[in-house]
Length: 567
Length: 59
Image (cartoon, rainbow over all chains, first blue to last red; front, side):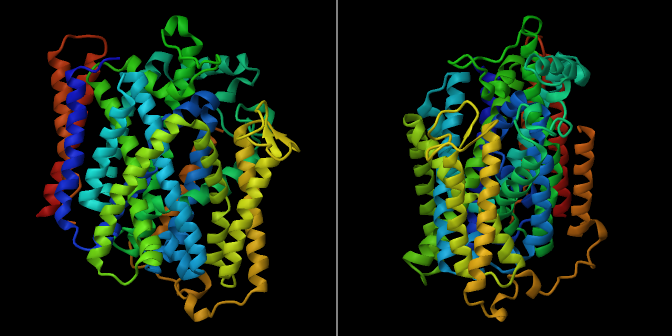
């Protein structure tokens, strides 16, 4: 597919504005707090949209459409039982401790609440993971640009990395946040026409249901397997995900989602940049509203793609196949884009794709430079230097972070296996995290030794579970079973969810056991860090609609309605 | 921060909307060109609204 002048023009306008925002903001970056925390000055809605957008990498957009094609509407579990409850929990219950403790990062909270070694473990694994995940997504993006537009790998990687580097170098976290808000709107406006055109082509929602019923029955599932969510979750064999309701609710809804949304500094950093406690608490709640509607923007196109493919002879659209003859689901969204958008809109759609990629990468880079500077450099390399020194260090870390991400992208391009293994390793490290934070914030007796060894134990449990089980029809190796195959799961997703459940449980139990055996911390030093020892801030002065608890309940009610609507 | 984020976003959407709608009206009426016009005008309106909001709050 060739882009013509109008498409390039639209892409060009986007690049000019993104860089312009960074350049304009450079004169406001006077202290390290401006650079790493936006001087805690963001209004709630700006922080909220950035909170959402930082997570909205290209993999999210492309990957959710792929899952929509592969698993259908049930993919919305990632939103309607996964992300939303976790975001509400973060805003209502956890934010008071993150924001109120004046910690500058999530690892720093761990240091205040537990001890140095728990912070070190979290900071180092988080820093490595951000680099690695921005590298992987850059690699995925470059492959896509190569396939769709014929751009060379080098060109896509260096142009995207260069732009992100410049705007963060100039404007720090504020620049990342402002651009994330811009990218959020662009992603919505770039993909919304696709849903519109797509639904028109399949004959509306009703036509989509009919076509998807054929898809489902041709693969041996009940008619509604692609358009329903919970009614097909009674038995793992009844839905294409291979998951039953307990695995979904516990593994995805509880452990994985809470672990990501409530402890990952990449997103929490946006809320910490808010201009008041009340704004910080509202940040994830405001983000939850558009997040709830995202399935219609990113999952439905995938469903449309597979429905159109079912009637390829009349629709003229078919998902391309991989070398082994299976559908290449990752191309669902991009293929729809190039197939149905006229020039002009095509430029907008491609720009939206680049915007989603850049918002994800900028999120990673701005979180990396903060954790590196505050939690690794200042903690272990050089403490007590001037604020200007750390500000400059942040700029250096930005350059280094981007260069390392580019290197990771090239490694991914060269050695796919190494990347798969690293990804697995990080999954093990992350799986138990939520147990540590839950106990840290809500059980004053939890100790530093308990937290640290609980985390290690949780990771070991995750590795053991993975090493002893195998998803259906997978071969022994990175997919599991590298110790022995004791049990098998219907799908990789089911295995992942259960790995997380085991890791969480092990970490939870170990932290409690070790904490009870070790010396408790002085309660006075835990004020502001633990629920029972922190005076409740009254939010009764605020108008009822601005109170976090009210907002949280409203969000949850809307989420339940959506679940019922697509039951 | 001294910069209201709605200003650059509004300006960008207005410019993109104008480009899209203008192209849709001038270029050959291929399949789907009508959508360029409609969507371009929607983006222009949203962009103008954002610029207006950012100007209003400054006063």
